[in-house]
Image 1 (cartoon, rainbow, N blue to C red):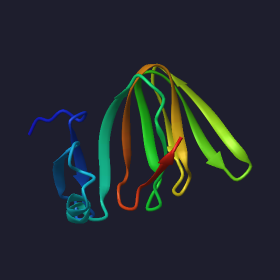
Image 2: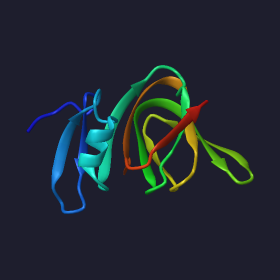
Image 3: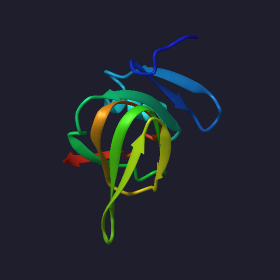
Image 4: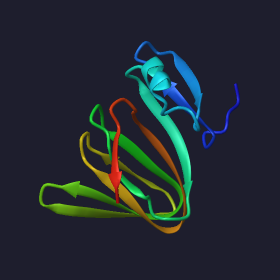
Length: 123
């Protein structure tokens, strides 16, 4: 099965099976419930800073910069940690840590995390 990860999310279930969801409809409660507690894989293209902070309470997030340049901001107990990525590189955002990104150059990023319980707040 061929798919475009910018238009479809792949959800890897705990039992080893997978499901594909449209990126436009994945976050609807019925789809989130159907997906269960597995791992969400998604890709995004960014030309502007993220408009929100996000936090994943159910697992760490692997953020892989495929191209471009970004500065990830992680809200830690002692302030904001800024991590610059250029060209390609990756960061593991710990479970429960609020994070956002400042886009320095148009970028593509791959994300792997547990989708369940994801929270957002304005940047």
